[in-house]
Length: 273
Ligand code: AMP
Ligand code: MG
Image 1 (tube, rainbow, N blue to C red):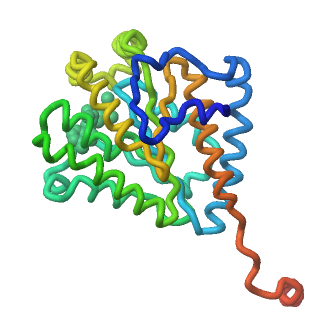
Image 2: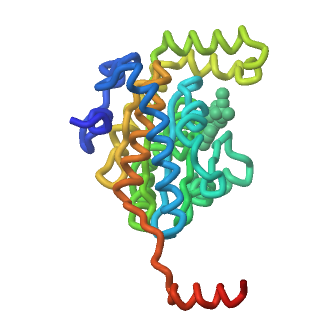
């Protein structure tokens, strides 16, 4: 089984996050993952160039996971090689009053990638079945209907040429303690800490249940979830980069052939020397 197959949530199965070791690094050693990342990042950049040239498909990388799970770090490491012009990163925050007047997918749809682009969601529409559910920001009938609504929306996207890569960054409770503690220790990182993170941490089990339901209900053939053991950053980066690369390879983008006579263009150019 390939690395990415091992991380896949098979559609129709139940996810049990407690059964997945967040410290594990299936199928790869630390040395190989660290050395292997740069070539993956380079090939992602090469294929992004072609994706842009072809203007046929788009890629949407959805990153979810609790506070300190490494969503920002993953973006930095995995997409460090790509041309910024071809990438659109959105961090979804608490919805604004205007956003709240619309359906929950309104602000999401607006940030999906057009043909030729890679978009990244740092948090996503899944917040509407995570925090909204756990904090009772909407009635149960409202958030329950969202699993189906999300599956329908993601089907629309995939049928419209958007390849989805959904990664859940899975960290252990102990690792989160370490990372929050490190944020408090370092004046350069304190700004990242929020008291709200502690309120969320206090509801660890309720969030885990919400994560498990969404990962189980919304891992579909067209848009499957992957659970990435993320206590070890080197594994997390390597695994997400592998998924992105695998998706780009499967799209197999090619720059379009010239729609003019190249010999004639060369001759015309030379007359303008
Ligand atoms: P951060 O990712 O640390 O910048 O925090 C963003 C905050 O926005 C988190 O506390 C999220 O739970 C919150 N958030 C994002 N999307 C939603 C949503 N749809 N409803 C409520 N809160 C949200
Ligand atoms: Mg935060």
